Image 1 (tube, rainbow, N blue to C red):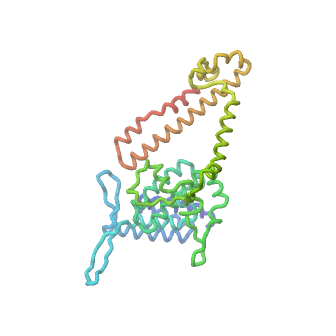
Image 2: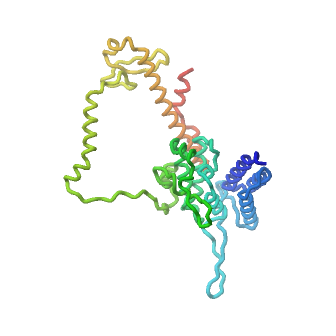
Image 3: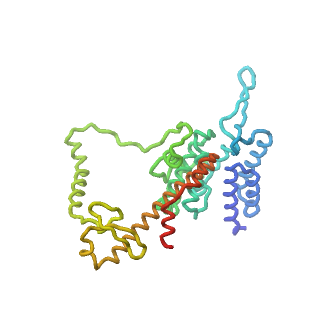
Length: 358
């Protein structure tokens, strides 16, 4: 039975993804499978929550189709009683599914579980998981209690796992050093703090979605700024002295650094065009190049080709990332025109890189 534990955990993570997308039937299927493989309290709790959500859907508090295709969930209904005994029916600002999503994040034990990804997840898997959860957890869209902290946890999880150095440190030490004790004596980790990124979760969200927030009602939590001091001009000069010294050193060092041997762009200084013998890459040199570097030509042309290919790869990565982002936004917002434009978008650097070795 112990050997099935990893498979049971995988089934639970798949089920959590199904809950997030609203596929309750599939979630129940994988949770039942997880229970058969290796029974856990987490699987039992999730199974009970999903069944309750399915029952609410059958009673009329579930999802309804929209014109654009995606399914939206109605808010759950609550009842209050006034002093006069009159019962007032009102609709909550959040759905049962949104509350389940927030509770799931609150129960997570590590950042991989927060994003519902495997420990070997690639950069693309992390981006896909973050985009999906960030849209669902943004407090201006999700009004469930604890949504703000859950949103921060998702942002912190991506900020750590997307950074190779921070991810390596997290894999080695985990959250053990920053656990805090709850009143019950058990350890509970606050994933909205801890291994935080260099930017706030809200800034990270704006980077992914071009600043397209849901109303800007979430206050950014920035690090405390240093207090401004009123000092004389002499003290100010002493503060700026290290910076001025660095500027002077930089200017002096530039006087003793020789010009590069070649350039990939034509200029007044590099006006003579040549081509590398292997890949036929055009490059530009000074007029006296042949007389000065005739014996070192093979090494120089190898550097030319390496720099050219490196630039192509960087440009290709940017082109593909931009295209994939447009395709994702088009599918997410059901924008047919944007999807068609993204599909027809060319990636010239990638094409050139592919044709380079033919």
